Length: 266
Ligand code: ADP
Image (cartoon, rainbow, N blue to C red; front, side, top):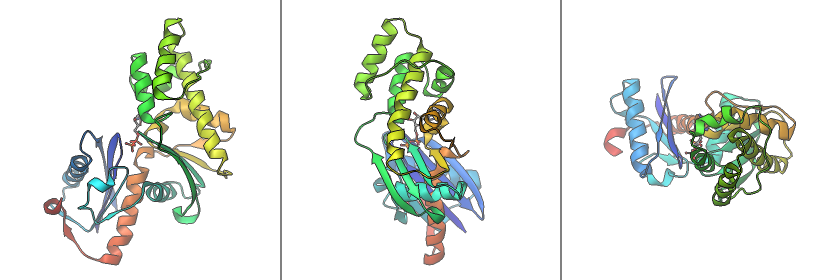
């Protein structure tokens, strides 16, 4: 059986394509067209897997899911993330996910059932885009923030609105403050904000951190320090939504039992 889960995020589009039990993963920038990104990531994964054109079922998730009506089913990212994390780490009870444009905390039960969640998708504070803007202002790439902020004494950052935080960073640089201390301060401020969301969920262990931003090890450390509990990051932290969508596609394919010529319809 061949099934796919596509997660069209605000920053990156991910696919998990399962071909007879083997999972192929591809990630590309979403760019200006979520529809094109969804089509492109599927074609790339099919090429990588050496598949001609037949897929049994495609589930699409993420903020851009409505842009891909040709998929068999659209499912919310909360449901897909919970399923994906429960597959990667079955004991998970709380998931923190920070993506490009939103952050969420999901409380999950057995087999990835969603029990409760809180989501911030109203402002960019502490999200991947926020980190990108600050990194650019510091003249570094977002992937360098972790090393830059590691073992540094955090400077207090008061603004979390992207625009004001950027101005605050400009002011701190003008005063001669070290980049590492500024980054450590940002990590601390984001960790404090996320901790408040986690505590509203009456968290049970273990706590798992997913999304692209979870690759920032210094931020993971700040979060763990702030919560005073270990925070784990699965190896496929940016793919949890796509993997969850792929698992749901597998179940739906078995129920529907039909095959679509994906390349033609997409
Ligand atoms: P979305 O699903 O909303 O597109 P993702 O979960 O794919 O979001 O996360 C995208 C964000 O992840 C980017 O905005 C960037 O800030 C962050 N990111 C990606 N790679 C890294 C990395 N290696 N280290 C730190 N942050 C990263």
